[in-house]
Image 1: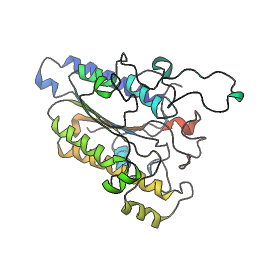
Image 2 (image 1 turned 45 degrees about the horizontal axis):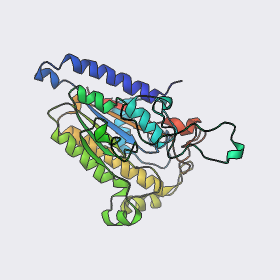
Image 3 (image 1 turned 30 degrees about the vertical axis):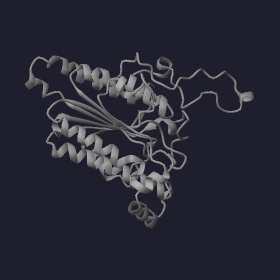
Image 4 (image 1 turned 90 degrees about the vertical axis):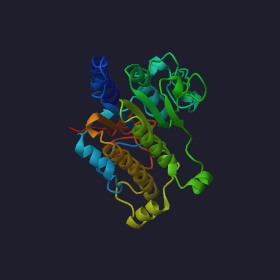
Length: 311
């Protein structure tokens, strides 16, 4: 079965862009074009929310988003790890089209045991790809991207070369920097940037891509959240309390974004997508699914996906 995440997302965008194209002639109709908020989590597996059945994790804001919207129970990422999955999402193409198959090299593992030669890999999204941001910008949308890009570090492969106008990309903080900022995985920086963007563009249609570094390893969590889950103790399936704390800190970001949409009075004009780039980590078992990130078993590609359009 084709990856449902890409199909659903791109079909929805196609419908919205068709609607947008019909309304470009008048400003009053322009306001009717819905805003698009895409929250993209790093390495969050299908079972990594309390809404989907975790016995340790607490994700009340994600659960509320799911309850208020539509849950896609069979959503699949287009690749088993970060870089190719993000390339598929942003470009709307499968890996054989954009040629980003893996992070770094595809030549991995003991070569003497390889049955086939690994296909050559590139690590930057080619500029000729017509991205989601290109399409939305052409449809009259303000476009913003905050967080993890992972599709090229130099021109002409930066998000500003691929249709995004307001951009703040960064690497996750080192352990030393985290001690100084108390901002695990730059969750707060990413969230504040996205919220400022939405406030600045609240009177025009916008598309904002919120690409978190959480919940990728290594683990970073605020001391208060970590203490809470250490006190709670492990569950039967999910036992890593530090990972649970990082997951909970990321969930707070979702709540902040949803609250910003509400306080700006744009809920009924805003579609919120929430999903992940691939399946869960070995530290977070996806039972009854087999496997984890990097594999093409269910546990490596099945992801949580929720979509909300109030009203």
